[in-house]
Amino acid sequence: MDALFDLPSEYKDLRASVRSLAENEIAPHAQAVDEDHRFPQEAFDALQKAGLAASHVPTEFGGEGADALGVAIIIEEVARVCGSSSLIPAVNKLGSLPLMLGGNKEQKERWLTQLAKGKGFSYCLSESEAGSDAASMRTKVVQSGDKWILNGSKKWISNAGFSDFYTVLATSDASLGAKGITAFVVEKSDPGVSFGAPEKKMGFRGSPTREVYFDNVELFDDRRISEVGKGFALAMDTLDHTRITIAAQALGLAQGALDVATKYAHERKQFNKPIFDFQAVQFMLADMAMSIEAARLLTYAAAVRSERNDGDLKFYSASSKCFASDVAMKVTTDAVQILGGYGYVSDYPVERMMRDAKLTQIYEGTNQVQRIVIARNLPKS
Image (cartoon, rainbow, N blue to C red; front, side, top):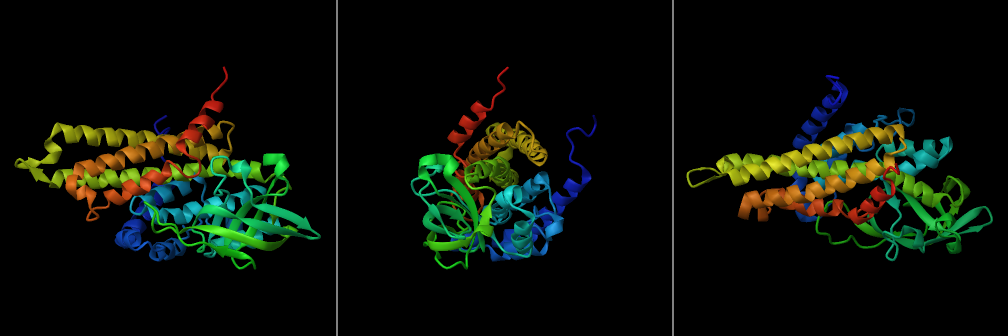
């Protein structure tokens, strides 16, 4: 019982190691990455060197074999100093998880080994007219002899252009709805693949978000993941696992903002005493800390269920993403308030963290959609 809610030592050691790397090699570049809207190359290099850019890849394919909780801790600690950089391991897991869940051994050997060596892997589900209603996608794939011909486009693709590989969902029969959708691995070098201009975003400015276009892209059948018509189910199964990485990201952003706000409250003096001595500020910090700890426990519980693929994973995954991202938005907003005018300018990172936190309430399923998922997965008795 004594250790029931205590992390085993290997996770504590992992946290300490990632925190040191994040503070020393990622944090110094975070402001410039945001202001210049540039990819966090320094973070990628540091994470890749440490085996953390795609730590979820199994050891048999050259990865670290980190479990879901380990990946969550990595993302949390990176997001604590730089949200954009935390999308490197998060997007790599999102993009490659359909392959891990539905691919055969030859496919895993082909792409996961390259991912472990430093290639990027993105996920192409959303479209301009198919966001929350992903099953209404218009990207089409038609079988022609021993090949598939892919045409269409995907919207809001994280790390598009940087990543070398893309899991793409496309429909071969729109009349079948979700049952007409199949998943494929597309490579950036495939003829007919191109990218739109980077989106100008409120937050996560260091992670390129671009549209991906497919113009008569020819794919042999060995690019198909799982069975024909099983792509949508595979995509939804993937999100059940990866929404937890968004919860971890939100958790890191919230913790980073609390750290800054607490330190500032002890240093900033008004009326001849630190503002921390004012009860109004103490109550804000207390509420922030309580919410973060609650979000952390829910996120870690979801990660453990992800690793075991428990029957209540959908509930916990959606709950952790929804709760942690709502907490992150509230905590980062309150951090800006505590810093006052300094919180509103880029001299301190809390305004960046607030902008980043907003997206965690939106992507991988809006929090309104998460609440639908939660309600539909409530125990019936």
